[in-house]
Amino acid sequence: MTSNQNYNITPQKPLSSGFDKHSTAKDILQGIDLSNKICIVTGGYSGIGLETTRALAEAGATVVVPARSMDKARDALLDIPRVELAELDLIDPESIDTFAERFLSSGRQIDILINNAGIMVPPLTRDSRGYESQFATNHLGHFQLTARLWPALIKAGNARVVSVSSSGIVLGGVEFDDPNYEYHPYDKWKAYGQSKSANALFAVSLDRLGYSHGIRAFSVHPGAIYTDLSRFLSEEELGGLDFGNDLKTEAQGAATSVWCATSSILNDMGGVYCLDADIAQAVSTPEEMPGVLPWAIDPEAADRLWKLSEQLIGVTKMI
Image (cartoon, rainbow, N blue to C red):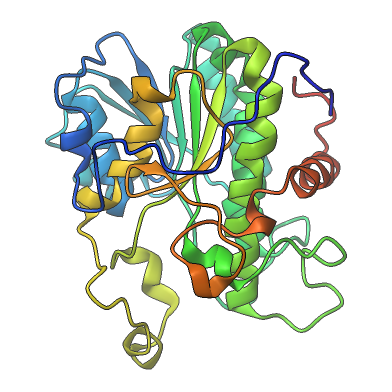
């Protein structure tokens, strides 16, 4: 990875943004006109992705929603204006390339890319390359998608890329010696935590690399929300999850992604992990949460992950 001499690291500490955990995506976009902006929201047809799509479109943006299940997406998006649907399966490298080629052939720019789709704690499953499904879908799929769409992001001149992480970072960082569980017993929760830490680390490196092209990157923890993401959990496992009074609505869960994608307060910032529509506080231990842990924002780990990701998907030149 090349260094950027003019790049300044954004402090990982709150800005007092004026919003909080109760803010919704619509609150964030109050008074913001996104006409002529083109956005892509992966998983933008269910859960917080659907609310993200709705808020951006109602603010005037054209929103492209890549979907694995086209019929489900079509039904969910019926009442939302300025939405385009296209097929994409993040665990299938060929599907990613096909989607990207079709979009690039339109000659349009991408102003906002929100890497929102994901899976959580499935049984051990591998993609066609043998890669563990959570790492492959949540991180590698979005890494490849962003790489393929790079020319359209550059074309915008001031694009933003938002990676949806989660408090799952508390479960651990990237296991560089065995990211695909080839040598160790599969632990679905640790694998989930790895993929979410990878989402955060991706933003750290992407922001540094995209800076000279006007591209800024952020990662977000949307908050605790009951969505279809929990479909692999048993009733007993669901019952064991204690969110206290911190459970958010889907509209509140979409707020931080939308804030990172549009807020003018962030114009000269990037590479940070955000929550509750603000930059999160860096903390040292899980006991100090909410915040962001060292292994999810460490520049050296981010650099190492970038190189590993290039190796695993066969992309050697993105920038």
